[in-house]
Amino acid sequence: MQHVIVGAGPAGVVAAETLRKGDRAADIVLIGDEPEPPYSRMAIPYVLEGMIEQSGTYLRKAQGHYEDLGIQYRQGRAEALAAADGTLTLEGGEAVSYDRLLIATGATPLSPPVPGLDLPGVHNCWTLADCREIAALLGDDANVVLIGAGFIGCIIMEALAKRCGTLSVVEMEDRMVSRMMDATAGGMLERWCAAKDIRVLTSARVTAIEAAKGAGGDKAVVLDSGERLDAHLVVLAVGVAPNIGFLEGSGIRTDHGVLVNEHLESSAAGVFAAGDVAQGLDFSTGEYSVHAIQPTATEHGRIAALNMLGRRAHYKGSLNMNVLATVGLVSSSFGSWEGVAGGDSGVAVDEDAFKYLRLEFEGDHLVGALGLGLTDHVGVIRGLIQNRTALAEWKEKLLENPHRVMEAYVAHSQT
Ligand SMILES: Cc1cc2nc3c(=O)[nH]c(=O)nc-3n(C[C@H](O)[C@H](O)[C@H](O)COP(=O)(O)OP(=O)(O)OC[C@H]3O[C@@H](n4cnc5c(N)ncnc54)[C@H](O)[C@@H]3O)c2cc1C
Image (tube, rainbow, N blue to C red):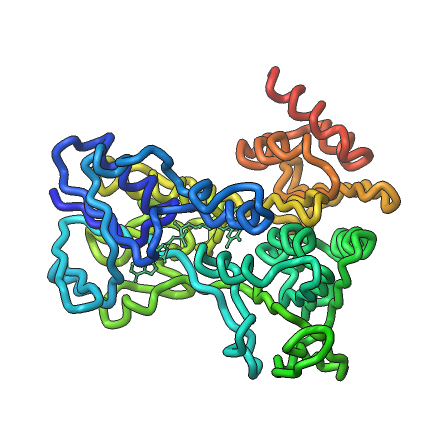
């Protein structure tokens, strides 16, 4: 059996290892287009901060890991797929045949629609190559403008803030991390950043990046208000889109990402998809969406590989769950955190202490939550949502005091 995996990120690597565990004899080819050993983007902020070397991001650190497992890891970029013939074409024209294929090509950063993105010193922060470019421009005198205060923007903010002179953040939404935080939490995050000398401008749109030599840098980020922010370095973090371009004409059904069923199989038999490129089942909504986070990628990779081995493993759906530290302040969101029609909410907020907890119920089930400044509750909330625990009388107690969520969990784990 010839298994081919295109994309050597966390989804691809976990899939390759799962395949080897389940089949000692199969041919396993892992194809990646980046010029490094497979690595974790999650560790990039630690490289930027100088806490680890680039090699610290590698997903598997032992020399010869892939060879020892009989996994053929090779460089290459997939350009086209003929699903009907079982052939993948690489850049340069080489054709690679497969019996089972996993598409694990991840995502690519989006660009804001403004002129000036091609100026030197304007970078995404998505790959290790980006990280090297950014690190070279950081320093005590550097003025840095970060465009985008979403999940990735907030994750890299601390590393940038620690290694530059001034950091300004421009966000077009009315609050930070608007896809995982409500107005209360977003406002608290903004105050937290201001207290750390990071200027956050929300409801602000960048209209251009211009070359403009001056004391504050060699560029200016121009805002719709007319304000100009001088910068030596501009970092873009405005979202990502799944890498599905090479599937054009392949017959594989795509929407936002590659559409997969509960076995992570695409519309073409024998072709699977996993990770940031896959539009898979959402645990909370029952709909199909892209959850671009690493835990979803690795779980997708594992389940897809089991199905490639012929074991009919079911994917129960990923919980839309994000845990994020923004310059030290931990925020988390789970499932239907914005609430559901006809549902109930329990809220506890302490603005001065930067602590906030919001629980969302449907009937007596916890279906979503938001947390700020809290860490202990993460596993407990996830457990209550994923186990679809019927909370009975505990629902009223939690509406009164959401912080009793640990007690509720313990009470139900003993029944
Ligand atoms: C700075 C940063 C911090 C992050 N922090 C977190 C975090 O704290 N928690 C979290 O859960 N997630 C985090 N993420 C997101 C997380 O890294 C992704 O969800 C995860 O990498 C997805 O894994 P993947 O295997 O699906 O895709 P990727 O890791 O993107 O791997 C896909 C690989 O496929 C390659 N590829 C693409 N197209 C082709 C092609 N045509 N041919 C061959 N190869 C191709 C890509 O170059 C890439 O190497 C972070 C991301 C970044 C950038």
